[in-house]
Length: 339
Image 1 (spheres, rainbow, N blue to C red):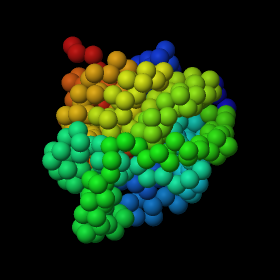
Image 2 (cartoon, one colour; image 1 turned 90 degrees about the vertical axis):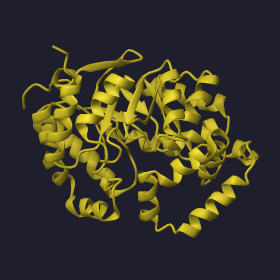
Image 3 (cartoon, rainbow, N blue to C red; image 1 turned 180 degrees about the horizontal axis):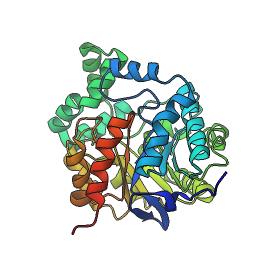
């Protein structure tokens, strides 16, 4: 076995810093390794059939690292088989190439009671943006994908909207009493011991703590994870709501991960409000959904992200070598110094 190259040494992409932590500006996502494409149920099923075990993922992952120099990846622990295969594929890829891969780790926020914030987020968004939000929410292509994936009928969507619209604008009082399952959270994160994890970036379930205005406890969680990993990013799909609330509460997070793309897909409650919050933030942004679930051409996506918006990094989903060629070539071009 040769010398293991560090993730910074092996990266073919420029490196940025988030709160003093260096990270390549292109990060490989977990989609569609987890069977999620954000395009159609049929395409999801095709990828789920394609993955026959960790080695089938290595066959895609290894060339992405070796040929294109991607040395940072999202890691997301869950009990799903594909999640465990993905983690094992990362380990095998690193061993085969003697190449360290930096993990931008995320997880759900486990709670001791099942929670659904979607109605309350809809109500807040309606207050902020009215009809524009309603059109955005219902017409968003990733929302439409979710409706199809869950078999949601038009009548069920109408019922959801009616229930959400009737809610008060204050968080339900019972949200103050719901307890975080710290033991479960630690168990999820412990699965990544032995990996290089320079950044923890929460997923959107952490929005709950902001919406419930449990800022003291959220800060304790952030401090706990920063002691463990060094850098904490708060994740959200509702940048236009969550970022201003987090900044008003003066949370000591190091940045945010949120959808940013030229089509405004999943940038909520509206693309305008999301961009206003992103541009007003003084903290770094890692863009997720940079290709809008495959709907924004890469040659258009990356100049927009890095030159117009100025995000620090982007997390991209790649499931084949053809996708890698198109996506990573465009990203490298956008990140190359101007002549």
